[in-house]
Length: 518
Image 1 (cartoon, rainbow, N blue to C red):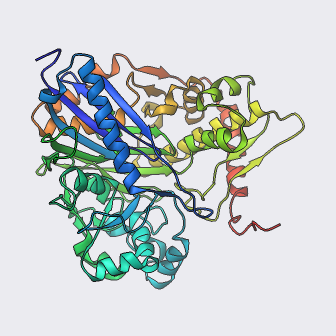
Image 2: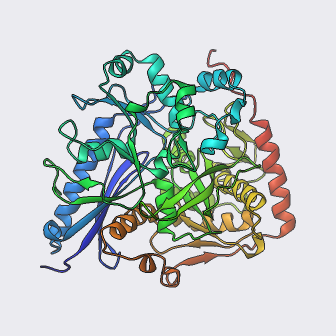
C-alpha cells in the first residue's frame, strides 16, 4: 500500500457541525473535513436541526476527507478498518421505518419547549423532579430525550400516526446515523450505545437496558426504541451509497463520553470539554454515585459487551462557547470567535462586570429553567473589552461550580487534583489561565484538543483489534506534549470574585416570565 496500511476513522457529529477524521495506526490524525449545518429557532427557547441536513453533512465530510487522504498518498480505500461515531447527546428525533423520512425536525438538547411537560410530571409523580433518579440518575428536565419524545408524541400528528401504525423509530443522533449508514429503510440497524441511552432518562443505569417501569409511567412504547450496545463492539458495516462501503462501525459514544476516553480519564479523574456548552465528567469507576450537589449520575464508558462499566458524575453547562457566538452573531462585538482573546486581553479585569449566560435557563448545579441571561455591574467605565472578558469568565465560573460540586460528592482532595480540558475553545490561553485561577487547580490541555473524535476512534480501533487498552491508556505518552496552566490568582481575589459571581447568578433567577411585548 501507500504511506500507511491501517487507518481508523471517526464521525464527530456536533451541535453545529459534522466532521470526519482519519487516524493512522499510531492514532495520529492524517486528515479531516468539517461541514456546518443550520440551526433553526422556530420560537424563543426552541432549537431544531434538519435530520436530512445532518445526514448530508456527514456524507460530504466522509467523501471530502477520503479524497484529501487519497490525494496525500494514503490508501484509505483499502486501509480503512473501522469507524467510530460520536455525537451531540439528548437531541431527539422520530422517523418512518418504511420511508426513512423524519417525522419532525430533531429537537436539540438545549431546547426548552418541554417545560410544561416537565412541570406536569413533577406534579403528577410521587417523586417530583427526582422521580426517576434512582433508575436513570437524572432529574426530570427539558434537557433529556424522554421529555422531547413526549412532546413529539403529544404534538406531532405524523409521530402519533407512525407509532399507531408501528412505523415509527425513535433515536438520538447516533441512532439516526447508524440506521442510515447500515442501509436505512433497506435493513438499517436500529441501535444506540450505553452512553447515549443513559442521557434519555429511559435507561436503567444498573441493568443498562430500557427501564420498564419508566416506559410504563411515561407511556412510551418500547418497540420504537433502539437496541442498546456497548461503546466498543462491532455493530455493523457501512452499506452501499456511502464512500466507505463495507467498513465496520465498531465504536459509538456520546460526545462527552468520547472525550473522557480521548482524555484517558481513569477512576477519580475529570475532564471539561468546551464547545457550545461545557461538560465536566468525573470517572467514578464501577460505582454509581448519587449526587447531593446538583450533578448527574451517568455512564463514563463500557469498552466491550463484557467489559466493566465505568460510571461518572457529570455537570452540564448549557452556554459556554455559544456565548462567544452570541457576541459575534447577535451583538457584533467581535467578527470571529477567535477575536475574543485579544479583545478580552485589552483589559486586566472585567471592571466589575459579571455575565450570566442563562439564555435558556441554567443547568448544573442549579437546574433553574426560570433563569435568564443577565449582565450586571455596568458603569460608564465599561467597554466591550470588559464584556468580552466577563463572557470568558462566565465559562470558567460555571465549570468551577461544577468541579466544586464534584469534590463534595466524590470526596477528592482538590489540592491534589487537576482538570483535563479539551474542545475548540481551549486554544484560548486567557480562558485556560482564568479557569486555573478561578478553580484553584492546574488545568492540563493536550496537544490534540479534539479528544471527542479521538475517543470515538479509540473505541472503534479497540473493538476492531487494531489497538489494545494499554496503548489507549498510555497516559505518560499522552502527557508528553500537554500544556499545563497553574493558578496564579491570590486566594483573596479569587474568593471575592466567586462571591460576586454567586450574587450575579442569584439575580438571574425567576426571570422567565419577562414579557417580549412592548
